[in-house]
Image (cartoon, rainbow, N blue to C red):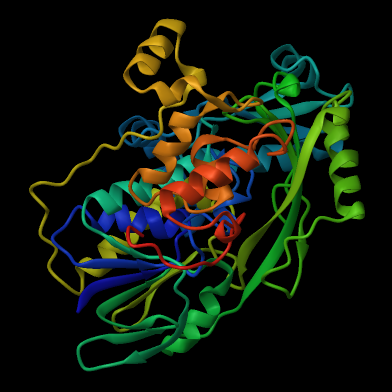
Length: 469
């Protein structure tokens, strides 16, 4: 009998697991893929929004501002990449100034510092901005993050504090019992007193299984272009355009690892698994991104990708106890990544109304991620190679990722079992050749350490459960 079963291993589910791990609870996280961070949390804009866009009084507004304020300290304690780089929202027409001022007023109501700049003032901060920019909203508290590192940090911290993870395990049904729920999966059933529904685009289906108040989740498809590190200094701030009912529009932003990201589009679709890119979608990214920033170097694009945002029909986050002991964290579209730790706190507060939570005296509130060899100075690199010789073998040339890092990624808590799992933990395969050089060696290391044949190693997706998973 578990106290809580969390369904979904994205940023919100893993943040909730880390939050509950602070207490004397028996917690299990169930994820249908072979790793955490396989859905929306791996394919988004990687922005920690300041909180000026959400309607005052909504959960989005409250939890965005709270989550954003937590990020700097969390990134230090849990060792993931975060940078406070600030953001601008661009206005291209004098007639739009009223809309920009409304956005600024909304930000002030939410407690977010904002300032309206003239086009000239904006270009002083960002010289590559379009000459057509007449005004810009400046939000200094906006930031950028590595969403893979953040989600993995929450997951590993939860795991090290006693949370059980059942990967490659899909929930097929939920039945109410006298004690709570039976969560049926394709790998057996789990008994639990409470359920946290953090299932992303499938949160409506899971809610229906439990008999909660019905809502719909619509997948909103967003396509992106990612450019090489040669393009990473084109802008230093995150550059938005005035938002519409479909979202915050096409943005241009640096990443915490030095690349340049442009996107996303916004298209509501029916297929919850459709992450294909399209000629028209990527053409839209190019055209609209070029409205904001002059001479974007699209010749330096190294990959394109698509993410699906889970858009609820309430136009706000759905965080509630929908039926006794069943808690939804649904409709977590933007600013969901920014809000994840605050959503976790809110879920815990709701749970406290159902059961007594006793703090765990030996809880560990820090975590050390993979040591990135390329980020060390020469003396530290030499010392590490002397201690662990595998750090002297470069596997991924583009990102300077070593064999030592890949072995750490495989052998650490909730270690990688796929090529994408290694990539998200180490960046091996994220460079300009997009894994063309390093994949064979990475496959060999995975097969050796997992004790399987090289034909059993997958790029991503479901697989056999390994004993340490």
